[in-house]
Image 1: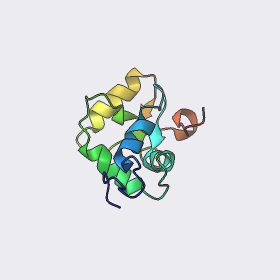
Image 2: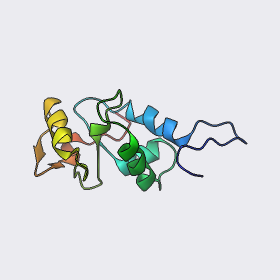
Image 3: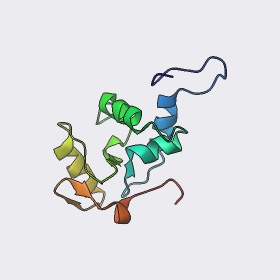
Image 4: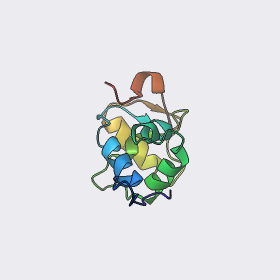
Length: 111
């Protein structure tokens, strides 16, 4: 099923809506990986689809997209990298060489 498509047979929320709802749960001062967000949205193998959604989502909106990082803790590879680092630092997250320590700042949805 494509990103953002609704399943008419089951009348389930779109994958993108599930991702955005999960993203809203990530607390300030924590980050989540693309794969972690996919897992919370019910599609554990859809990390790339989550990355696509994040790339299409305007930063500065209501969603805290700056809290999403790679599985190694690296920040976005997009032009947003500087702004993402600034926003994370404003939340008390240490960023070194555009990387976050996932052991210290990672969030898995259970805390």
